Length: 258
Ligand code: C5P
Image (tube, rainbow, N blue to C red; front, side, top):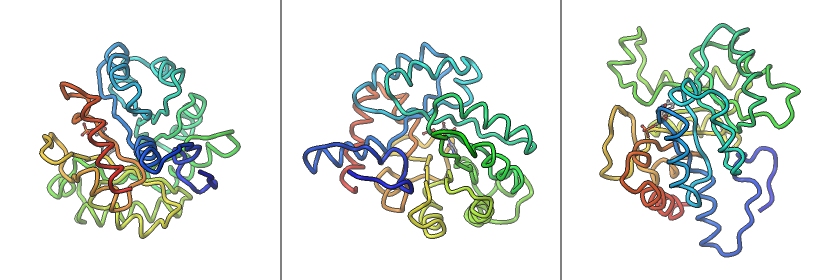
């Protein structure tokens, strides 16, 4: 597969022989497992169980706060792609500094909160200018755990979908092309961003899975059909008795609609 620079990063460098393998490989490049575990040993155990099935891992606040940047090294040494999901939200100068620090860690995607505002987003983007092989900078729109009462409770009168659109338009104007949104807004954001947009979608639940605290959810197939580039899946895989089996079933479901 050839690629151009506008193609989502993990869709590049695919080398596969048969159409079926091609689709499975493509699915694998678009499934990100959220390593929401308390320490490096638990993360290593989970990654061991998923070795050969999954190749993208998300390190979020729980693990990063417990274990620091060192927790990324074993993942990177194994050739996995890492999404550092710290959802930065602070004054522009502080976020720019944190983005610059993160850009040296070898991760391929990282997040800031769009709600930090246009100046913060511009500063975050500016911090990556001149960085060789920078991570894709993603702006988190409205958390997938936020439903209408939660959105109203923080003083917003818009619906979650309207707020997502407002934040995405603001992000695009600040030069951001990557967004995290729920499955319910991904089709609208795809229409807004066009094919250049890198849309990363959590709140994924295979049919019948426990929803937990997630409110705005969809199945893997639905999210892909609506325009997601990447699916983020945590508990349905990480808390399964057989994580690799669940991940493989999700990959099959994804491959069937790719
Ligand atoms: O376990 P579950 O599949 O719900 O995990 C979803 C992951 O996606 C979590 O790591 C969460 O932090 C992250 N996330 C989210 N909603 C967002 C952005 C990130 O659920 N808007």
